[in-house]
Image (cartoon, rainbow, N blue to C red; front, side, top):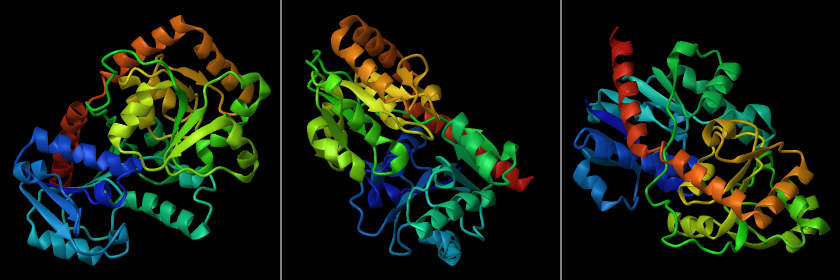
Length: 357
């Protein structure tokens, strides 16, 4: 089977969730079926050398740019006439009209339908159109049961078309050889309001939280006007667009990863933190309970006092920290990119069969 994989997001948006997913999944597929994957990358991308040796071919696309295939279906039609494929996986940016071969598309979450994020109306419209375009896919890959339910709730997609395949965690994310003394609390995420960063800043700026470690923010994050007044007291630094190695260091040095998001299609930072032996405190919403299971403390994303008290508990109860650490390590071991790639190969075969039937 000759598989096409659109890996452009790995280079155009390398620090965002779907860019990191595209990069990790591309590598896992190359390991699983060397010589069978045609990788489509952005023009001028610095492609890992190992990809060339394992891919059927690596094709650089000069145009269109980020996501423009959604509005320029002719580009895919021309490209696919030049490269023979049995199936095409589009992990980001939707499915354009007229793709002439079976397609598998990945769905992450329905946040653009549920929250005013992004705040600009045209960006929100474009994000919703991208999600609606998934009806054109032969098979849809949902990254969690929660994501599947959301997709069925906002589009006319039929349920039998959607399959759930969980994401994995890279082996780079591992515990420190020797346990480290916690230096900080950690938030990993973007700038969108539904990520709920202001709740953490408010909880940690409370006088009752004065003895708690400072917060490190990792990601392209901004704080709302109300939160900025308190941020200087609670936040020690912001690490914009951290590399995987920087994230590993931050996870290993954290008392806990804090994820108060009101909606996540998966919650990859929770999995990465657990793989590094970092306790996780997460919201009891979205896919976070599905991913974390009983290996994290799950809280109401609007209960500021509960978050402050939970963090205080970890800061003063080493036994509780040890329980969460061990549970997280065990939980993370069940999520591997190797397993994800194997399940995706099943979806590709299903898409080919579906199209030919």
